[in-house]
Amino acid sequence: MSAQASRYEIGKPYPVVAHHATFEDRGGIHKDGLPQKLGFRAALVLGLVTYGNMTRALVSRFGEEWLGKAVIEVKFLKPVCDGDRMRIESRPIPGRERERAFEVTAYNEAMNGDVSVRMETWLPDPFPALDANAALKPIEWEGERKPRTWDNQVIGQPFRSFRYTPTLETNRFWLGVTGDDLPIYQQGDRPPLFPSQVLRHVQEATAHQFLSVAGLHSSSRAVVRRMLRVGDPIQVVTVPVNKWKKKGNNWTTMYSAVRSGDQVCVEVFHTQIFQLRGVDAA
Image (cartoon, rainbow, N blue to C red; front, side, top):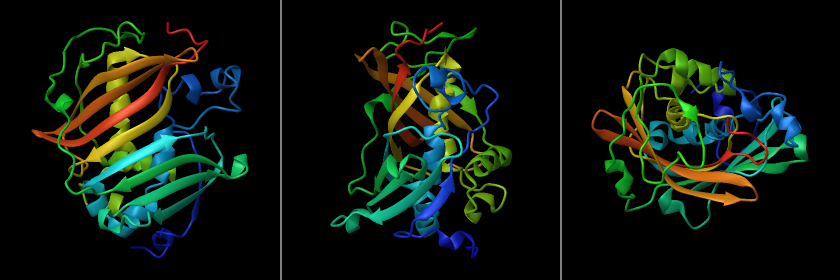
């Protein structure tokens, strides 16, 4: 561990500066214009970027042990914008030492220290069984994507599969966005995937199925069963498991099984507003 990276310790706060992930297709609430019209102060940073920023102390302490097996729940409570200075604190949860349970909190100094994101992680015994949705097969199809609507997101109907193989360059992209300097992600030809990239699979699988104008990530629950590495062939199968309307917004929870070969490596339940009030789906 480098002297610089060793500053990431459980119980010791560390600062980060939030930055956009500059995808070519970045739009919606992650690009200036629409966010201000909806009442936000600026374009929103992807929630999974802040999530990645919140993993440093855990990875510094546990390394591949945590990256390879854990239950993680993260809730996005208030928006984070480009350039916001964040303070990240990781603390053990009292009374749950046998579960290796920790709470990680992201405080936004740009918003008077308000809590923007809260995360819990633990290692339950017994470990959760595979969700029944993991057995569902993708409904494959060819052609152009259509806008995502209330009607065409059908509960229990899987999306077509999303496949790709992560490279060293994709890992370095996330390290560049977050400024993470832990050496574990840069050692050898097949380092572990950066945690933001693992959750990004769910968003990429949805983008492979639908066009979407604007969405807002609310929370995720991940069950990590095996660590993913650069070079692993990955298949993601996603299925909506719930949808509801609240205050004019369309909400959904999607289940994704992230596979490599015959093994489900990560299961993710991803909850979001998939159509914001006042934003046309077309």
